[in-house]
Amino acid sequence: MRVQGQDGDVIVHKLVRNFARDSHAAVSPLTALLLIPLLGTVGLVVDVGYWYYKQRDMQNAADSAAIAAAQTPDEDVGFDGTNDDFIKAARGTALRYGYQHDEGSVSVDATRVPCPADPTRTCTRVSIGYDSPLFFSPIVGFFGDGADGNSQGIAAVAIAGDGVADGGLEFCLLSLDTTSGVNGISGDGVPKADLNGCDIFSNNDMNCNGHNMGAGTGVAVGSNSSCGEEWVSGAEPFEDPYTHYASNIPANPCSSYPVSNNKMDNLPASNKLPGAIVGGGVVQMCGDVLLTGETTLANTTLVIYNGRLISNGNNFTANNSTVVFAGDNNASYHHYLTDKVGNSNVPDSAFTISSPTSGNWSGVAVYTDPSLTVNVDMEQSGESPAFNLSGLLYTPNSDSLISGIINKAGTGYNCFVWVSNTIELNGTAQIFANPASQCDQQGLDVPSIGGEGGRPWLVF
Image (cartoon, helix red, strand yellow):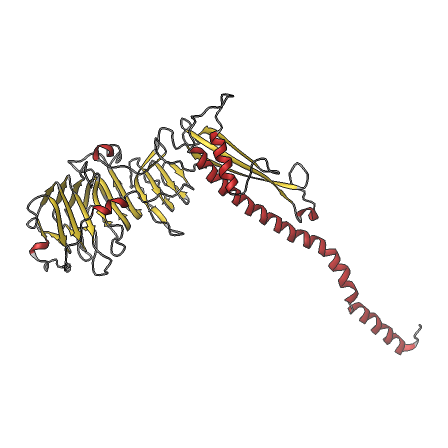
């Protein structure tokens, strides 16, 4: 068609302009061109996400398999001069997670190896391998590294300490808290804190910001950030080893529980020491107990129901004795050792307690009934009060703070174990050297892993 004249030029111009603006015919070819890389990218994301999921699942299987294999002793040697019981234990455990050795591309192997942190000890290494099929990634030209040219190799490795080897770990601090995101044991900028080489364990994370606090080996069920000369993460959780002592607490005889006021001048004579105790044996007291002078006990189980033991600037010494806190979870009552009531410390006081070395309370210096969960937090601010303890300090539901020094009791052995919900070390917090070295003589079974009769733990 030919259009002449000025009007014709205008018509042609409009036709060209409208054609240039009309993109309907161009959409389909452009979409087709972009569809292949778009699908490839989405597909690659799907594949990679599956690989991460599969590797995490395999890692769980490898962790459990390594712990199971580490617990299997080298006793039954086969006809070929080798022992494969621990390999069978590893493969049997992996099977429970769905990974059967030599089924398809799955491989489960276990070997005895030197422990990474201490080559003189024996650890068990378990590796799980699997070739994951490719679903969408070949669209973008990725064909994996599998032998068949159409799969991606995935691996998981775990190393566990040998539960029957010598050289296990004995813990002076054990945190029981399992709340997600909580540090069971922590220290923040405490360059003077010193645990004198004792090993520590957290059923959660542990974090030592700026200083390892002089601990030996720090073992955490979660992550360990800088706690101890050696760090271990991903350990199996520890069950509370001392709940059974609660059965030794005698029935509560109390009908009322006097509570000290801030001036500590309102308690009856029956709630004051040393006058209230004449001899040893089992002594039961109701409500807050206030020291009005230097107090020395021997061969005594002092049970305080719904109350504190308040030093008030006086020294409390208990030889071959145990202090027990019991009662109920009424918010009006508190259950712990302290030097104060209110906000002000009373200086120059000390709790010196050496546990019995035999009997129902063997090894226990201070015991808080595990059923108590309210008003149980324990704090040692600087040197007030001073703690001189030989034996177990058991505050299982307490969020505890150590700011001063914990020394050995003069009449006790070199033995100290603190079990608490959480433990924070602050300032110059210190525990005397080798605090678990003589716990056998003190009569206390120390929480431990590794060593004869101990439990294996993950070290990698």
